[in-house]
Image 1 (tube, rainbow, N blue to C red):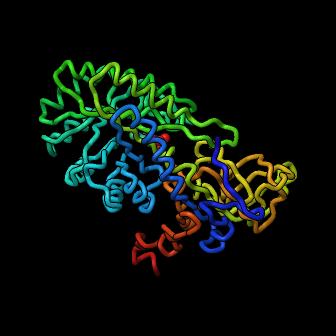
Image 2 (spheres, helix red, strand yellow):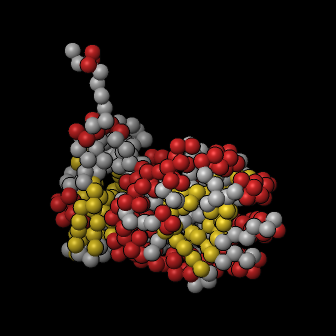
Image 3 (cartoon, rainbow, N blue to C red):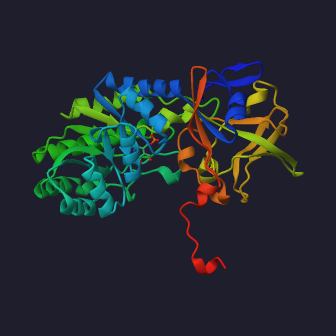
Length: 419
Ligand SMILES: Cc1ncc(COP(=O)(O)O)c(C=O)c1O
């Protein structure tokens, strides 16, 4: 079920702190991250798999790469799935060792391959072209390959990544050749990886994916290459709607690990959850600044738009919405919740029943910790918002709100235009 929040005197509490106090102290819009929930989610996913097989969780830091979040996960013992040199360097800054990180880029430039290998981070090779180009930079090191399993799953077509013809990975029929070629080039292939997509509705595609990976592991084994790990990627779904069921994580872990244990000699499984670890650990707080009756519908106008949370506009995603200072009160009417961006597609929720919203109310947007801040932008020249960490009744700023002036810092105006 979607995560529930406690309240006190009609006020929503996040990590033991009143949402309204956080908004008053840090301003809005603001992402509020609950440290204990991140720890709990990490332990749940690690616990589910490690019961059956040696397990490594590589947190997919694209979901939220705040340094405080990364430090929490480092303390928990997590590794990292990184997709860019920026993510690699951010995770090193958070104290991860190069050996904790696996780099899974797509359409990677030679320059980025050079930088990542220079830092001692393992490359999960996405294409034969990338392998040949990497061989010109360095060989001798362990590598793994991302394969295209031909199984895809996701909450939206834009995030299905494992289907046949996808831009990610090496097609199944060429995988064995790629491993043989890698060895000929002097690499040490140690793993195999696939990622079917993000946030699909059930866990059965993971079992299909595991069966395909197991077949390939055995085929690769017949060429004399024994792999040390299999990485099944991320994509574990989370409930975004009040009555949505949780993913059957234990069932998934048991069925998937069964496939590898019964059919292969591979000993270690890597999983790369992003959404599962941070999505429900975070609430976006945004202030109601305007109420508008547009005749056929009513609007709650708030100070966060798709510059702050793009998922509704980009994927049509549902985020549950409540009024943090009228928590638990009876709902009165239907409203669209819309932001300050000058596009009709700028909304956080359509047709939501809310308890008499008024200017000044504090709107809580649930389950916004994954692909929330990390996908935010400066569109309409709006500064990136702050992030706050709450932990057992205490709150700390973990990202300052950007200033308008900071948006100009990398721009240069030619002298001749200044007259
Ligand atoms: C290679 C890879 N691993 C893991 C993930 C994380 O997915 P999720 O946040 O749904 O767990 C992604 C997301 O796009 C990905 O591309």
